[in-house]
Image (cartoon, rainbow, N blue to C red):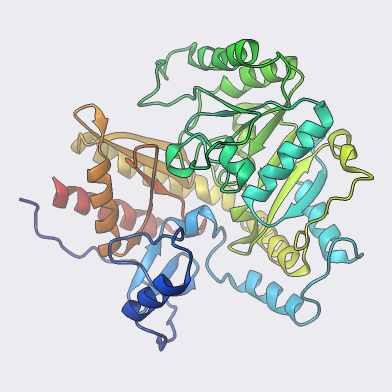
Length: 448
């Protein structure tokens, strides 16, 4: 029998939320079911109703406080309602709320300059859009225009968006249901530390996995490709990093076939890994195109594609337009978020807090055999559960629900739904880290 649950105390917080006076949860569920598209789903058996946020915390309609360790799916970066981001939005909203990029306004130029400065040469040309799906769509278009080739390769277990191109890039059955997918997209075997077909720890693992890319190019295409796209660490797929030399070998094979290399930094970018500002830098490579979203706007709808002068030049003279890309409000949110990140060294903070969480989780791994793997870096972490050498999907689902009961919001992912995803706002304290580990320990004891 599971042990009786006990309360794990959240660290103190000096923010007092405004009492909620809106519709009840039951009423909202009923109204939602009547009007929203049925494809818009809810997490949790008892749906979560957050009504206020402050930095790393959320409050529900009853006034209960939660530590948010999922950040609205790795999206809230410097904190819910961060005062400086909020002030920048309020200031811009009072002066000019919308201007398309075919007008000349300073906000888009100033933020593009600041963002481009975070990249190594020759990545310097910025195109703003609204979401990661749009950014990946644009990156594929740029690659095809530049190379004159059509075939695009991505990794099995990846996720690159919910539009037509994004779903065609995605190789993860949970998120891929367009029948048939668009032509011109192929998927290659991806590294995985638990379920992969090649020993992940072997010295030649990176080279051997990269050989799968070379063989797909040789036997599954004309020998010429437009692009290869990969997340530096798979997010929805369960927080999956690669062997250190993997991307280096893959990029060489792709470029030999005339293709461009695209890094999808939607979840790994902006210092979240704690070691480099951009995830691709952890592998010693420089892509030809980088896409980003989520953390870029701290919750405001914003994304971008960054590339080289040469590749961007293929867009010159073409009518290509994004109504809200580069919108003054989005630029205000993005620039304020970036300024906070750079000033406060959120990357270094991610490293320190991530190391504390990882150490605590690995201690739990020694005590609880159901933890098959603890992986990731900084504040993009994954805990994989397995039983009898199989993904422990039901266990993970129960664990996910119970964390919420204890005031901890986490994510759940992986191909089999067997990974708990930890991707919080990048302002967690040491006390928050200890609370997370304590909740994990208590829930593991409850389910033992």
